[in-house]
Image (cartoon, rainbow, N blue to C red; front, side, top):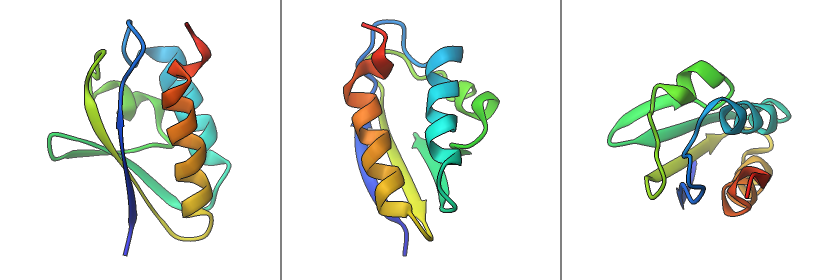
Amino acid sequence: MPLERHVTVLNKMGIHVRPATRISDVANRYPADVEIVKDGMSVDAKMPLGILTLAATEGTPLVLRAEGPGAEQALEELVALFASKFGME
C-alpha cells in the first residue's frame, strides 16, 4: 500500500522548471515509485516534464505518493523540499 503525504506549493512562482528538476532529483535518489497527484491527475515525480503538466501554482494542494524501497525517506525529503519553497525564496 502506498504511503501518502499532503503538501502545498508555497513559493510565489509555483512549480516551474527549477523546482520540477529539484523534485525529480530527489525522487530519483530512491528506488521507490514516487508520484505527485493533483485533482486526481497523477504524474511520475521522477520526470520533470510530467511534473510541469500539473501547472501547480502557489497555494496548490498536492498529494505525494510513494511505494517500495525508500518510500518513507523519499517522502520525508520531498516534504522538506516543498516546505523550503524549493530553496528559492
